[in-house]
Every structure is written in structure tokens, then in C-alpha cells.
Length: 485
Picture 1: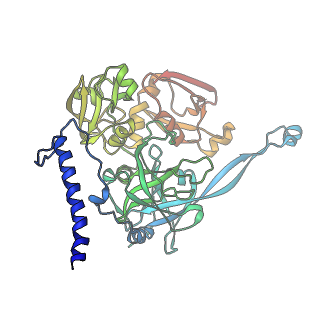
Picture 2: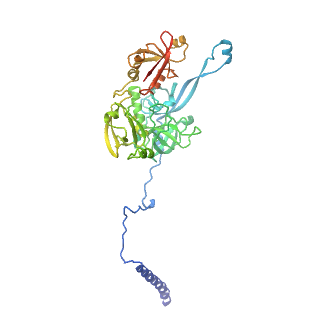
Picture 3: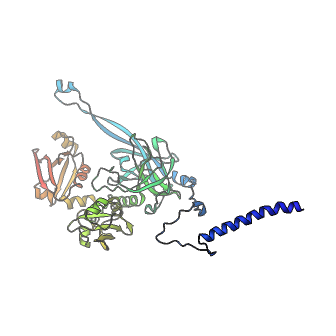
């Protein structure tokens, strides 16, 4: 027993002596025996903590339900396009004195589409069905339909199809403005003709402008994702984990032509506006704010002594436009539209693209360091708040009705292309002296294949641009007219 007490007492003695030595050292360093609580102040940087101390529940990555819900609403779009290829045969020139005749052949293409309504309205990309003579849609259960093209909008690369179906499985459309960076998404489509393919990724960026749409007034404010998208996915669905459509897959950034990590989708909110316009009016009703702008960068902010380094700088206000009427001035910086932050030109064009002429927007600008709110009533390209059909816009913009050139006139005049002025009702054509039945062959040195190509070129004109029209008078004499737009 004594031996046991000795063995316990010796370590206790050493520990007590060590404690006394430590206590004496602490007193010598100024410890008073009180507990001191150190509070964080604004001057002290926040401490970094292990996330294990504050666990955040992970978002669900179960894509099964979303995939199954979407696949049935995504269709395979097959197109047949006629191409003309000129074959040069020197024997024709040598023996017959005439050029070789063009050869026509059919080219097949494919893409994807998304069923929006149970009665068969389908959205796809304009570039998927462009110039197609025939469009065939195949659903996920292998039913085939020949589709009717209801309308297109090249400025957003959106097209609307209609098939004669009923009780079709349609997609539920979500609010693309609510999409967040890092959010899980699925891309559903038919890459390389591999039908009903699903890939997963996240939202990598929003408001991407990649300069892929070669149209004046193009709206590019893509959702960027790393979900694998390849040729054939165009027009397919980008959905969130709830199975809601948040975008239409449109483009990839690639050197090889196949997926290399970046793909882009038209936001669902913009798509819906375009589709509703095409259904109701047959064309998109574009709304304009009436400014010329530059994106605010750090360099521009410093150069112009701006108080903000994000937004859209108003470089010019168009007289009589929507911004001018509202009181927005040159030098203002647009920073918010209807509660949506505007950090870039893409943000602004997307916000405007979701609205029609005549609608009111709340626009916040930064003017000399102070934020000011304005109510802006948007206008169409002609400076009014009306909803115009293509025909009405033609009459208002240059005062004429035009039709495609008939095959009889083409043979008589030896022409391949051209359009006929069927009626002059005032405006620019009358002022320039262009008569009825004048045949327009070229507009600003570009051959006109049809009325659509004429309208596409005319829509690119701005006030003050020079216009050169070349063609043939009703008597067959070649002539031209030049005037300022």
C-alpha cells in the first residue's frame, strides 16, 4: 500500500510544481486572473472558419425526375433544304456560247425543338430551319409530323413551328431571370442524331454576348453552361432540376466544331416573348429605348469621371425617342431596368427584348453620382407605340408594296432574282421617283432573292444612310435610284 501511494504521489508532486512555475510565469507576463473577451471590431479582418463548423446542406443532384419530365417534350427536327450549285463547264461557253446551268440538290439537316403547348406549338432555333422546304418533327415516342413554320426571328435565333397534334407532352417554362450562377442544369436534345440525349452541368455565366447572330439589332444575352451540347442539340431544352425550361440551347464555343466546355442558350423569358409575338402578330414587335450606348468599363469610368464602373453609358439620345421623351440625357449611366441590374449592353438588350412598344419601364440612371428614376414608354423602330405587321411597317418606312418576281418576268428579262414594286403609296420611294412595276434587282449592290431578303436589308438602315436601288423600269430599261434613308 505504501508503495502504491508513493507511485501516485510522485507524479502529482511534479504536476503541482509545474503548475506553480507556469502560474508564476503568467503573472510575470501581466495575467490578473480575469477572463478577457476580445470582441471583433470593424478594423479587424473577419476570421476564416472551417465550413465543417457551419455545415450548409448540399443541393439535390438527382436529375432523374427532371430528365424524365423533359425528354418527352423535346422533339427531333429534320429539315430538307434545296441548294443551288453552279458547275462551270467550259464546253458550254466554247460551243454553245452560254454559261453552265446551275444544279439543284437537296440537303438534309437536323436539330431539336421543344413542345410548348399540348396542341403542337414547338420552339426551335431559326438556324435549324432556315431556308427549309420541308420540316419533319419526330416526338420521343417516334410519332412523325410535318411541321408548318409559323414565324422566325433572326435577331434572337428563335423560330416557331406548329404540328397537328393533340394531348402532346409540353414543357413547363420557368423564369430565366431567377437563374443563378452555379445552378445545376440539364441539356436535352438530339446531338449527332442521337435522340433523347441528356447531359448535365451548371450555369457558368449569364448575359453572354458572343457576336454569333449576324443581324442588326441582334439580342445576345445567353445563359452559358458547361453541360455538353453538340451539333443537333440546337433548339433543344436547357432545364433546371425541377424540369422547368430556362433556355433554348443555341450555340457552342469550339475550335473543332464539337463541344469543348462552353455552350449557350437563349433565356426562356426572351424566348417566350418572341414566341407570343410570332403567334399573335406573325412577327416580333421590337421595342426601342432610343439611345446609343457604350458599356461602362474601368477605363471608360476613369476617362469620363463616372461615379460607377458598371452599367450602360448613354453616348447619344435619339431625338423624339423613348429616352428623350422620358428625360434621360447624354452622359447618364443606365444601371437598372424594372428592378433588374444592368451591368452590360447584353443585360440592357435582353431587358428591352422582353417588352413591346407602348409598354412602360422603370429605368434608373446614375447622373453625376446620384441615382434618378424615369418612366420610359418604349417605341417601335418608326418612333410610334403601335403594333405593326410587316406590311404596315413596309408602308410606313418606305411607302411601297413589293412582291416576289414571277417566273414569267424572270424568263422575259433573263433574271434569276428580283422583286416587283406593286404599289407606291408615298414616302421614300415616291420622293425618289421609283415607279409602280419597277423591278428591283439589287439593293446597295446586294442581289435580292425575294421580299424577305429585301426586308432584311431594309431593317438594317438607319437615318442618314445612303440607299442605292438598281433594276429595270416597266419597259425593260435598266435604271437606278439613289436617295438618303
